[in-house]
Amino acid sequence: MIVRDEEASIGKCLQSVKDIVDEIIVIDTGSTDRTAAICRSFGASVWCKSWNGSFADARNEGISKAKGRWILWLDADEVLEQSDPGSLRDNLLETDAAIAALQVVNYTGVSQELPEPIYLCPQVRLFRNGLGLCFNGNIHETLVHSDGSQLNETPVLLPLQIHHYGYLEDTVRIKGKVERNLKLLEQELASGKSNPWLYYHLASEYTRLNRFEEAFVQVNKSIVEFLGQSQLPPALLYKQKYDILIAHGGIEGIWPGIEHAIRLYPDYVDLLFYKAMYLLQKDLVLEAYHLLEKCLELGDASKKYLTLKGLGDTHARYYLAVCLIKLGRLAEGSELMKRAAYSEDASARLAGLFPLSS
Image 1 (cartoon, rainbow, N blue to C red):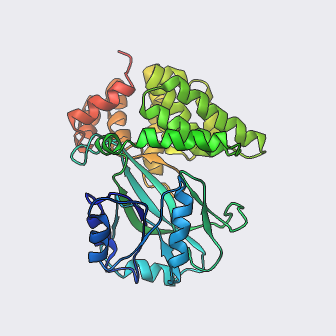
Image 2 (tube, rainbow, N blue to C red):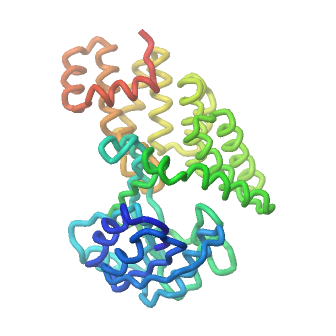
Image 3 (cartoon, rainbow, N blue to C red):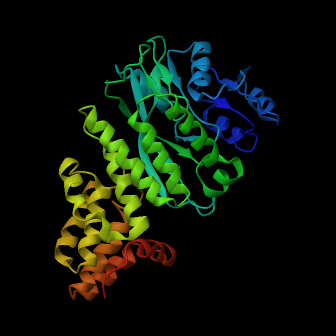
């Protein structure tokens, strides 16, 4: 772990792993609060390192201290959830893989009391020690080989979750994350490094500031950069692109480009849901109904994609009920809406994004 002034959250994080790991290594980049003392109370080894503007350098310092066969990396605002403390070890003992992924649950609402929207994403969080793997990038650092080449290995996905609270609105505001991230990203770009992910992350920060036109420019730059490197742009970029269009101008802005994205990623539930909302707005109800059925079939817990929680479950059920009612099947639609257990707040929030035609 790397930390700085995390006394409000570090205890919950370490409590979630203290009975699972053999050692806890903390790189402190300049805390002035009780962070280091709290870490030591959990038996952690705390090493001080001056902050030089690089998250990768700090994480690599931690790798150099690790003695175990596997390394799990977490942030202070994360909590590892698992019912059986031995399950993580058991899963790792059974795999020949070099890297392993966990499902990360990202809360982006106002506060822990109002955590929605919630995004689910499988992320590599475990890797074998001693293989020369390290982190690269001053911000939004990624795990790479020691020569800087990208990992091509397929990670094993373990049945465990990490709950990430660091992008709740009140936390982002208090810690000034957007301003910090923008500064680091702009410095990285100014250094002349060519990395299409930098534009994706810039788009994310501009979106948090509701600067949608700038965000749209950046995500398109990212897509063009990937294409220029003869790579298929990751599905995440298309989701971000259509998220921005929906937030800025409404659902109509996704057409017809969403068709191209779905051809590339036909099993991405978020893209299918967006298309269903467009069709429903155009009163193409039966077509929307069939797409929403597909969303339910795919479900929420994708092993490949970042997904908005509910688009393969609760949200899809709710709008299936809307379709049934529009098709004149009132009893079926009303019953399905009850079974969806959809709160008025959730309904109003989603309806604001996807207003339906009368």
